Amino acid sequence: MPTYNLTDNLTVYRTILDRRESLAQRIVDRHYLHRPELQQRYGSEGRKHCLTDARRHLDALSQAIVVSRTALFVDYVAWAKIVLASRGISSDDLADNLESCLQTLRDELPPDQAAIAARYILDSLSCLPVLPTTLPSFLSTDRPLADLARNYLEALLKGDRRTASHLIQEAVQNGTSIRDIYLHVFQRSQYEIGRLWQTNEISVGQEHLCTAAIQLIMSQLYPAIFGTERKDRRMVATCVGGDLHEIGIRMVADFFEMDGWDTIYLGADVPADSIIQAVSIQRAHVLAISTTLVTHVSAVASLIGLVRAHPDSSQAIILVGGYPFNIAPDLWREIGADGYAPDALRTVDVAEQLLLARAVS
Image 1 (cartoon, one colour):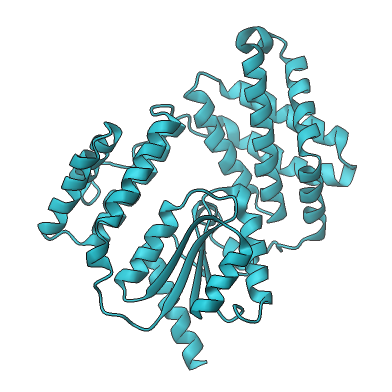
Image 2 (cartoon, one colour):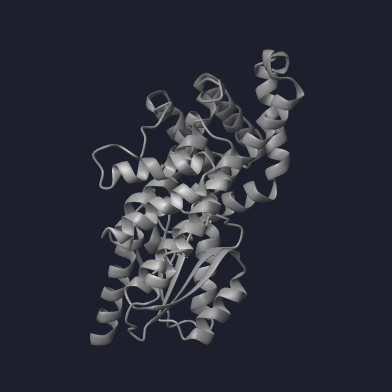
């Protein structure tokens, strides 16, 4: 079983982060030296994009290394392959870029550190040929509430929030549970919006518009959500500093509210001291932390350490969730959390089980 504080991996992680900008520049220089036709094909803007990609490679690589999970970097490369393929850039270009990354790290890092980084890059390169270049829709017809989810998302993509809201309100009035709306409409729609951006079918602006509309429509359901009987249990829900993807953790907070908990939803990009203060003031039984990006896993680990070290927040049960933990389901143990769940509904179940176990211990 890999260990989170593995000294050698932690050293590589810090080295890559400390030298990120110079390493990224050297990766791009090597890539363009090996492929001189890229300058003519993509021009100066293409070189800027290549530099951005090199930074992303290094960020994802360093995060996978610090938690000793090659699967996280392979998954990042799978994501990148689809993003690039949908924008007319072949997997051969991605492979060449990763090779440039590999050779640059071998040249620039001490041999023992380079050897560690190389394992992650070589593993991803071996997987690259069989990784997909596209993704199936998350709104397949065999899923619950498939028609509602499809019509709802179509309205959002047209910028028609009124129709989208009406569809949800009508479904609730006709007896569809809010939990099902969250799981099968809101959650699936968010997955699909991410897929559509990844495959270059919608713009960043459309993605942000849809996300803002979902938040508005979720808030319209709050009178019913907050009207449930209380349990005298409290939780704080947050994203770590730097993470701006807040829909998932907001859904988690709402599921706790539906189960009778009192929740403090802090939202996105919250500093650690503010999170500790909220847990302390509310005397929260549970702290739920979400991150969508692999590059924020170390920030989650750091936050957990700070919460544990503070006398006024150390007793809170800490649950984590989000995409990286779905890719590496045992990762929550490595970073010091008390539990993990793959979705909002099961997060409530895990919290209840852990509270029960604590009560009888």
